[in-house]
Image (tube, rainbow, N blue to C red; front, side, top):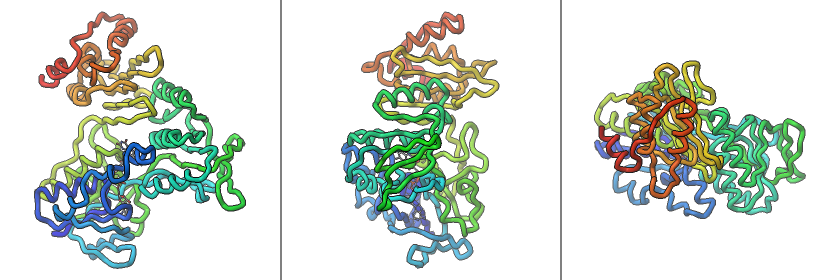
Length: 446
Ligand SMILES: Cc1cc2nc3c(=O)[nH]c(=O)nc-3n(C[C@H](O)[C@H](O)[C@H](O)COP(=O)(O)OP(=O)(O)OC[C@H]3O[C@@H](n4cnc5c(N)ncnc54)[C@H](O)[C@@H]3O)c2cc1C
């Protein structure tokens, strides 16, 4: 059987690895972006000089031949589902028995006036990184980043590493407040400003203006201000990269529509990773999940299903994610919405220096933990995962918080301050139980 995978990112590569591990099927991995799989999440570190491109390749170049995974560097322009064929950029065709589409995301562009000018770009692909190198090899007195969120803040950090003054135009009233509740969003907004960025909240891009050579010279905001700039980075989110499928009979909405076995509406065609959209997502999960670890999970389950003829469904349990806003690490477990649902309450603690905070969301009636955000604090993923699955109450979680601390030896502990505030706010008398790794081991094993 010949399996063709479109996309050599984390999803496609994980599927290929698991199929190979468990079967002898012929595997062809196609990508137009790079010859070999690399870690997209490490793009920023290449730019900042912490890594070189070859460090970001998780497998040595010989790995693919040794494991009989054929590689093809090309763009697929069409899926001919009637004949089970793919059309390559040169018009040649490739046959498949099973097709896995793992074609990722693309940066959102909203048809802004001037978005195609020289000196205007996004950050998603390796080619975008190369373009950023070129764009910043010229003199840039000021860069403008349009759009808040995780890629916007990464770009700001990248540009600061080259001492390029940067303005961030963010439509929301507070940074990422379409995802974060007010306390966390406010903390991050302050942190961005403290790092010397010109953060403009509640401000939108109107137009990007060219100089006489067709290169960007300024942006005009919706409030009418002109900001002179030689580099504009558009980072207003990403969307499933599906426009190239518009002539096929594969059903799409925002992404490629799939069931929990990653099956599309066409037999023998599957979709995984950023480009996939669940018709009916698992409980507590979104239809589209554009993060690294979910792509990896998709690839593993589908790879095993295809190799072993299984029909396992995707059931990842509670949501989690982690990221970094400049110096502040962020972890989230379960569901914390920007605004509580009708049956939810919150408890929020922030340290006096305004650089660490924890936000718990729980059920109003049962006090069962629903979700938690941590900023500036590292917690043990396995424990929160367990507590969410076991539907633990707030009192239980608060008393055992010390066991969730990831690095008690080197980090300033925060639990005493937090429990004091909790006891005051809820007129309670909870006491912290043992902290540290042994406490964690006890709890995780019970
Ligand atoms: C700058 C940046 C930082 C990030 N940081 C984080 C992070 O810290 N944590 C996290 O969880 N996530 C992060 N992400 C998101 C994460 O990288 C993605 O969720 C993940 O890479 C998606 O993997 P994928 O395999 O689904 O798709 P992709 O990695 O996008 O791979 C798809 C591949 O398919 C190729 N392709 C697409 N269409 C075709 C076609 N028609 N023909 C041939 N090839 C095609 C693409 O060029 C691409 O190479 C970050 C993303 C970016 C851009």
